[in-house]
Length: 141
Image 1 (cartoon, rainbow, N blue to C red):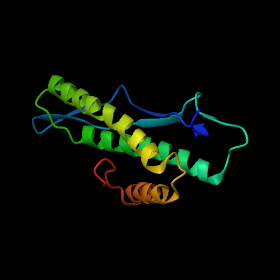
Image 2 (image 1 turned 180 degrees about the vertical axis):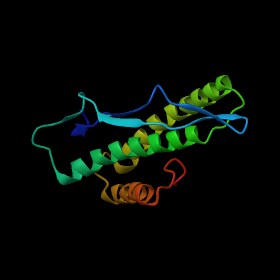
Image 3 (image 1 turned 180 degrees about the horizontal axis):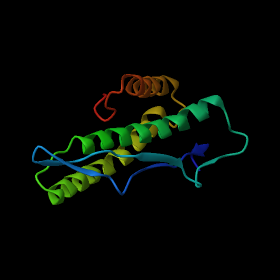
């Protein structure tokens, strides 16, 4: 093991999103996203610290922010048919899959799993700004 803890957070969207037809277009009317911390999250006994918790919280927040961006992208879609809407929603979800992985690796690499305090501070600020401003996280660099 090369790190003291690992959080496995997941987001999931509502499978039964209402489809609205308005002005000749179809769109998703609402979307619910649930965030969970999975059972395979762990910490090595005796290594718990505020800094470690802060770093792991960053992972959770990044996941949540990316799901927020994904949800907003889905809610912005307008299509001429329900089938076209479904294809576009699936395209967006597929586009985000590698982004989740890339952001997690980038966060751990740049912060050295929270050991690099200056890099961790920059990431904390980036995360905090995206939360407080409601701005997109994907494009926040």
